[in-house]
Length: 177
Picture 1 (tube, rainbow, N blue to C red):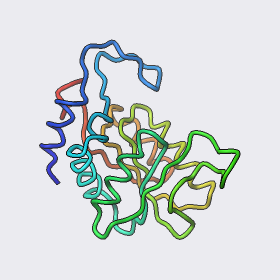
Picture 2: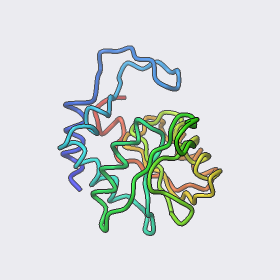
Picture 3: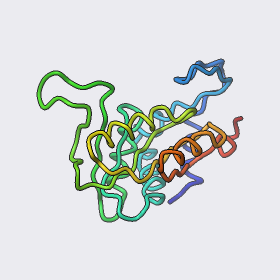
Picture 4: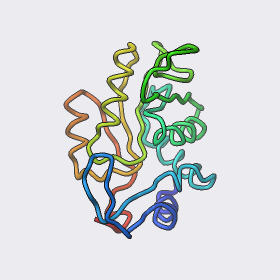
């Protein structure tokens, strides 16, 4: 894993300091990370996949989370993991046609899952993904955030629901606070 190259990619492509920005959580921040500028870039995705795969606990067979932020991370990680694992996505709401449901991709009751997210402040998206997976009977053992701007709050929330948590990059790594 080339963490220094990942941080450099995020700094040069994804970090914005021309705020204020309103975050998903409703909080207002002077800086923003548009992680998709890295996760949807070929070179950036390779760095992200390698970094997240290096943090996966043993036995994980699939990675994914709420669609949009988790999707490119899940695919890059599935490809970078050795041996390769599966990726999945969780829709914001169930479809009323086709196979329906919220979980999309090759994941099922036999899997051991790690939830991923691009950026987290409150952990709400990760907690929602965990709840959807658990409601479907799928075992969730871990969660990994590409960037955690919570100052430890997300780690505490996930620990309270029995989920191991890892972070790839912090605001300090990116030179923002």
